[in-house]
Length: 89
Image (cartoon, rainbow, N blue to C red; front, top):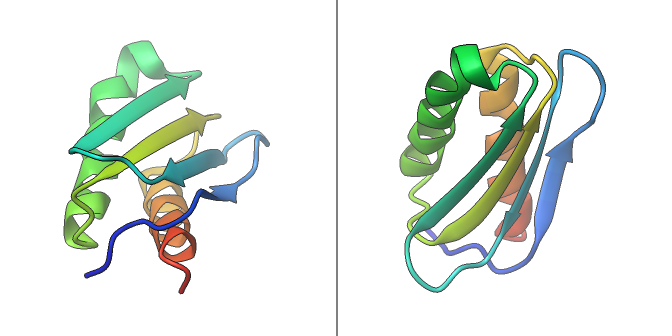
């Protein structure tokens, strides 16, 4: 598992999608979430993001998620893609 070496993103700002941006960080994970359904599903979305980061072995990164009502599977795919791009894969 390699660290995030560069800023990368995945997704769009379209309805039912999510835009995920990831960048290198010195210590730990910092997750920022802006969602149209934050009040109802904010905690669940953050949990999904953290699960994907953990599964990918990411320990240090800043992650910004702008959610426009995406399903969990879409959020997972966007985070995973951003991680791969951030690693230069």
